[in-house]
Image (cartoon, one colour):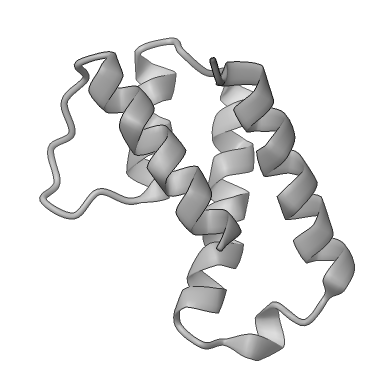
Length: 89
């Protein structure tokens, strides 16, 4: 759920900024790369997005053993919330 919210946030942001995305199936990594190249986010923000994308992908593919650490999931939730507040309107 956290990953889906982040993906929607990034996708809408890219659309609002009229930035283009090459692949037909954009991902969190692609969104992050586009925003970093356009200098809308920092290098650290991009690293955070990449990390969150990994955890999101584990959950999306049913790799439950990779998402059982509640502290790690909580850190993702807090990080995504802070990120969205930082760049949200």
